[in-house]
Length: 253
Ligand SMILES: O=C(O)CCC(=O)C(=O)O
Image 1 (tube, rainbow, N blue to C red):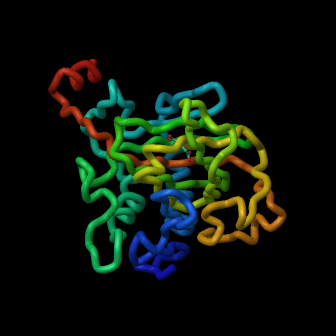
Image 2 (cartoon, rainbow, N blue to C red):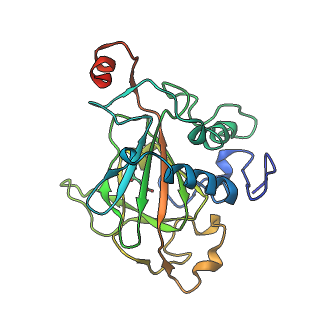
């Protein structure tokens, strides 16, 4: 992959189309070296130093939402903190979709950039149930992985609406990588992460983005021993309320 802006450990495609995962339904992109080790550590330190009430504790997993939770699918208009904006958003918007085309991934989204970030922390053995992200967001999800690798499973719904229990596709996400899912992959498929301590049967045949991985040699035995992995999922929330209207007053109470 050619580097648009040489920075230690960062390698960006000159156009997003070069990072497309061709074996997946339209459309996914994978960039293994999206941020550097130093940038990864700075973001992890910021997450760790966030005030305790920022964490929402679920039964096995905890998460932070920035700038705030959605209320009835609406976001209160507030900027992302600088450490979530730079380098991730600035870098995302700097990559053209196609060569000789200046438009970027969020060029047609309501706010022309992601305005919301969910931070999920997954200890080994913990995942997330298969789900769709729904209609509150513009249908583009950008996920930056920090700290460790794991597999994201992609599921088809059956004709009767039931979930096919076997994933149709598996995407391996390495630390410092960016995964983008959009189009039919966003609207028609579910995604989830298994509650396991090891991802197994990893190979060029079973992993959709194998040819785009930074270090496929790390998984030659077919295994990924999980350690704590943190993800940042960036999205553009469609509906935003300005402070001062009723939602703003309600939230500020
Ligand atoms: O952590 C991930 O990679 C997936 C997160 C996720 O499924 C979500 O935020 O909806």
